[in-house]
Length: 151
Image 1: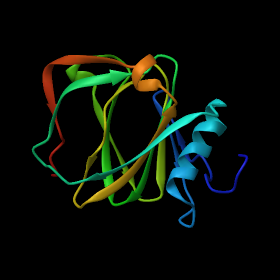
Image 2: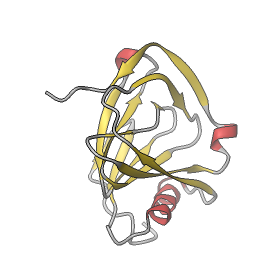
Image 3: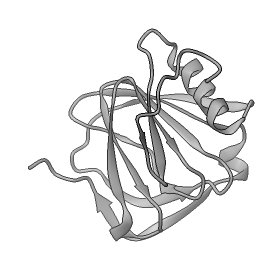
């Protein structure tokens, strides 16, 4: 790592990696640095979103970036991030993230924006500058996917 903000990589799969981010770090800077460190992308779009829990939320579409990873950093609260290696309703899994964690979604992984889990949340999203215009494919799912219900 080039900077001390993004920390260790405790979890990794073919779909994504999860990192711990030091609490004292500025979220937007940490997300941009993490994107640069994992992909050498220097020019990033970095966006902030406030999320409200919606237990009845369903996802009717997924998106994919063919050449670009995407960072989702949780500043406050907890979120669930839908990801799928293959396109299809039955392939979607929801990955939980808590404040201080960041997920790097690999290129060629179907996903969509997270939803808050349990309480209001704030996230930072970072990807290569221009990704929504130049490296974004969206598809409608055959059947919408709903959030997993707590047991």
